[in-house]
Every structure is written in C-alpha cells, then in structure tokens.
Image (tube, rainbow, N blue to C red; front, side):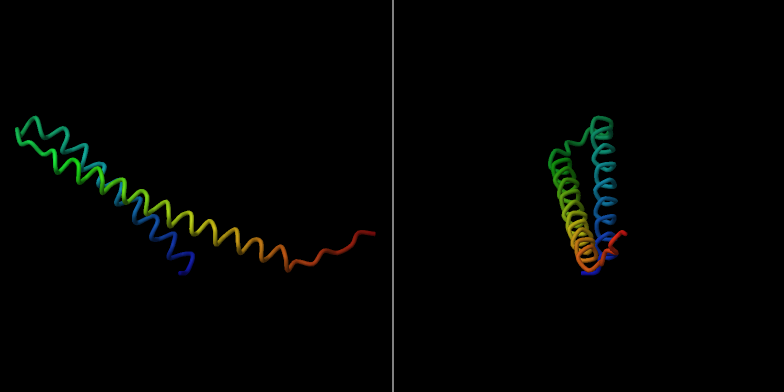
Length: 84
C-alpha cells in the first residue's frame, strides 16, 4: 500500500473516532433530557470510537515502519566522501 494512502486512511479513522466521541458525549448529555435509556447506544459508540482509534494507530505505525525502512535503505546506499 502506498504511504500516502496509509496516511489518508489513518486520518480518516482518527476523524471517525472523534466524530463518534462527539456523538457519545451528545448522547450522554441528551439521555437525561429526553428520558430514553440508551445504554446499548453508548456502549456501541464507545467501542466503535476505540476501534477506530486502534485502526488509525495501526495505519500510522505501518507508515512509520515504511518510512524508517526507506530511510535505512537510503543511508545504506549513500556513499561517503573521505575527508582529507
């Protein structure tokens, strides 16, 4: 997978995580006002938010691994000029 695609996917999942967290907080504030027990909805939003965060971190870690691998390859192929 191309590195730019990895970054795009990570940003997408982080954005999804934040959106789900906002919905979670909104539900927690609105539940007492409306009077509807939404325990299952809160649990689903919480677990979905954490899952999105974990997926985003996995994409970021993969991209970091590829970046470090590319850097190591570049330093191996770089020739040094002797001083003197």
